[in-house]
Amino acid sequence: MKRTKKKALPKIVSQKEWQTAHNKLLKKEKAATRARDALAAERRRQPMVEIEKEYVFEGPEGKVALLDLFEGRRQLIVYHFMFAPGVDGWPEAG
Image (cartoon, rainbow, N blue to C red; front, side):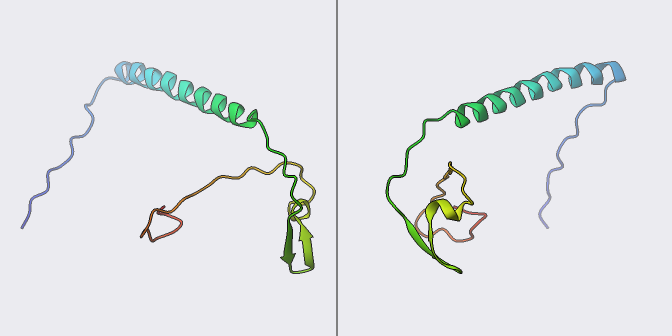
């Protein structure tokens, strides 16, 4: 039978030491949140590309223009998710 090594637990400290460590971690978490928010704001300021081609789709009610698919919204954000050759298991793998 194979033995598995137990993972070491964090050390036990006083309430004061825990609070100091917690405050240090909290600063890092807040910095990460601010960085993520700044990145999201930068993404929203990305330049846009105007779609000039008249796309027409076949919907349940018949032919529909691209703008009609999105209920009149003037902006559409597209993210590409690519699959490597031979990758199965969408959506967990890609």
